[in-house]
Length: 230
Image (cartoon, rainbow, N blue to C red; front, side):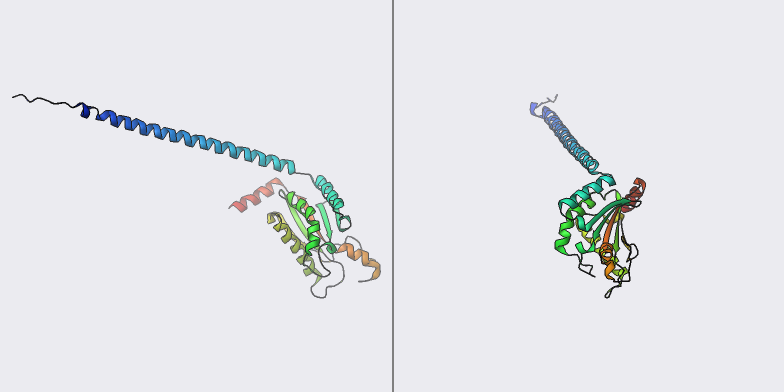
């Protein structure tokens, strides 16, 4: 006897359901890919805009040493600090010399808080323009021998105190060096004996901390950055 085959429309339609599920899954994956691509493009555009703005800001802030000299001279005038600050350009770079009386007690290397705050607008300006340059911080004393510490130690400690403060307000120390000169580089030459009254003004002028902004070769800074990233 010949067997009769029975077909079920329900069973025949099962593959359509599976196929629909597969298409739905593929569509969902494609939607995800498109969504992620859109997000990545948006992030890329945002990062690109930020980089352009950052580079433009750095370009706008970059000044020549002569321009920085004028800015600092104006800040000194506006803040009534001209008698405590001397600014000039020499063969080494832009030299900003701060009288020790404007920062330290006599024979001390501890910064006087209210006095250093008065200097902050100028120190902030130095930090801004130090990014692509070398910075020397030099300590100087008068020719009177120290009673508690030597003039070498005092000039070194004062330079270090200024360096630490500059670091607190944003100075990158990678291109900074500290120099202690003691009494060996006077601004004003002495005329009389040590501690003589005739040389009081010379001693006042020679007790100072100088910050020298020196131009740096791009290759030097690039090598320093590569070493830092290792």
